[in-house]
Length: 229
Ligand code: HEM
Ligand code: HEM
Image (cartoon, rainbow, N blue to C red; front, side, top):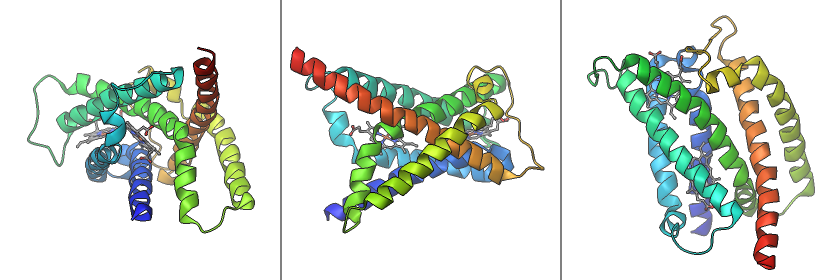
């Protein structure tokens, strides 16, 4: 039963990561697919919150360490960004929600959609990194034995991917999209979707890497502060 629950958690989290990655190439993948994947992301997001309802229910209880503050602020930011992506996406929709349109909102909805998509990519990847130890613990329990070789293989792949992610971050001009210096995402239709996905995946791994190590430092600091105080 416990293993079943864990499998559902892992599937939901992996599903959200895959959806997020597949949403970034928009028309490079397919416009209609983009809207359906957006809806799938919304459903998984609701399931994610049902699975984490204990955390949400205890938000007003207990002491707040620096780590807990940062974790909670990230969750609030993600909530706003997800709402922004979904509402603007529905207003922009040319397929599934074609009938929902408000005159004169196209440009604003576009800018909100792009801003929320790119900041969402950053913050959700950081959030995944902060919880990576939980993912490792859950996945480990699905295997019969712990394996040092498995751990080091995964760590080495992640380190190489994160290193490449620094290059991909610059190459894809992600800072320009984050600060709306560009109003349209540049899609190279000749290059195809795979190089785009590889670059964005490594950017996600880079951010998760930062979240993982940042989270480790913050947890230690919070522990020290609570011992001293
Ligand atoms: C790509 C998207 C996301 C991924 C991969 C992800 C991953 C994770 C993981 C691995 C955990 C640990 C527990 C579990 O496995 O369920 C977690 C917990 C949590 N996530 Fe997410 N998440 C994502 C999006 C979001 C969003 C958008 C929000 C909020 C708006 C959110 C809020 C939470 C909360 C409140 C917890 C519980 C915190 C805790 O137990 O410490 N997540 N998430
Ligand atoms: C977390 C969820 C989502 C993310 C990360 C996301 C991401 C993106 C990105 C990166 C673009 C390209 C922007 C550009 O070319 O300037 C885009 C465009 C678009 N998205 Fe989404 N999206 C999400 C959800 C949705 C949903 C739910 C819908 C509709 C049901 C939707 C509909 C659209 C439409 C219609 C466009 C084209 C806008 C235009 O240029 O006219 N998106 N999205």
